[in-house]
Image (cartoon, rainbow, N blue to C red; front, side, top):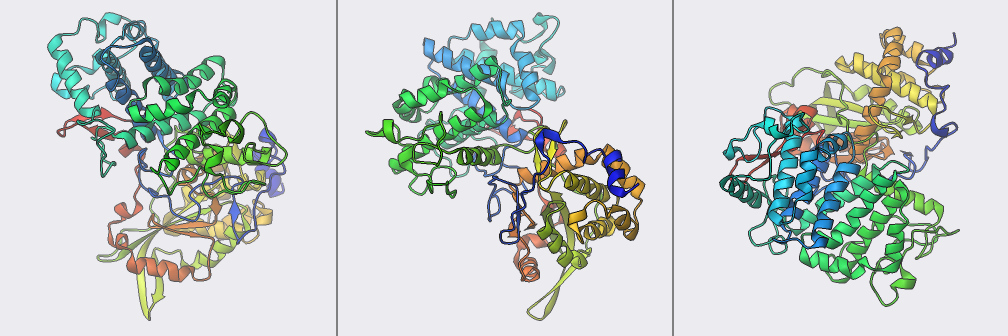
Length: 627
């Protein structure tokens, strides 16, 4: 067989036209780069938390499951803790809408788990009975302990000091009397739980007054900024992971979040500002008209820009701009505050409208292209390719090199590519001979050396999930075949960067990838049958994981290099070696241990993340697959 036919048959990619992907070719020969179409990640700057676990309160990367979980618990617990002592009808309605939204439209597999707990008859009966702040706090406490019991059955429920057993929160259970009952709870125990919850979630002088100077600790009661960012994280992330056409229950649950902010948002000043524009007839009509995932994304986008504009005009955020801040739209230029100033004397005429498109964008209307690009930008900021339920690790399974010599510096170099990107191929050709265990370069007449940890990652689109991917390689199906084979080479031949010989050979003529695979496997000393078998059995998973990792790290241009998780180089400038050499010489992280230099939080570490209690006591567990 001709090799293309063999791979078509054995890997089964080329002949499958998924989602109308035939003919897609979006390599942009601009500044010698290839781009994922209409995607805005972190641009020419490194994401501020690249290589480490992102935080909902200070991040410019899409949230992973851990971050979204922490944000959602912050929304639930903080909202409950700041409710009035005695509910009004609106207080009860707003609280129920937030809880219901988590059970119905929470992203990922955790939604099914929460729904199982939420629909338990005893849990529902206790929720219906909630009439006070303390009862709301206790209900959220029970829900959180029930989620923790599902994920970590041996963990002691919060607060540890009361000595409750995890089995009391295993919900649903065949016998409802075996679960912890909120009705008739002992008054001493009730007070101890409420005191612990108050210490964890309520700032002593109120979330409006108290502003933390550092918000990245896990044991801080939220201030106004943390609570606001948690809410935006929850709303944006929920919108981008909705089904394309949500069912009526999902639509109602999502739309209920907007009304809940009006009714029970915990910051009184913020809530007052929200009340000023909540009743705007255009905004209300757009809220009512939400029917699809794209409608939901655009509504939250507009709402966030309305809030941002309010802060800009009040002088709170003078340096901010509506999102996306640097994009120029066709016929419109940059977005500005006049399009989102609600209410104003002219807002009925001047505000951006979402329900209709126009031939060319104007200050009150987006054309189809700009509308699509804004949706893509929001998704790039808040959604990981392939979904939130994936490991988000994309290194070779074994280290390419042994441990460094004593005193030797370390260099982590991540290269982001596409399988048929011509500029990636040119970059690979130029650096291939330098990718060795000991990277050397010349600077100021001296030879510098560092132990190299080089990793290659693929950039592309996944219209499915990590478990059930629908992959879209930017240069078409043949590129996807090549990426499968290349990642399989990385998977099975990592030592001494043997797999790079295969990649370099394939890149010598990207126009015919993957036809060169037999020749390249032979020249690199690899078993072609092993590569093809891997591509057939594991290749889709490997590519999906690589796409997801690149998306999570905010990469949208190839080739992109990142040095020690902090220096970003787009393309391959003529002075690339000088840039790397300077980084080795001047970056203090180059002198740290290899484990530190590689950074990041793996699956096991993420599963073990905890939020510490006020006096160092372990509190709420946030698992990588949990909310």
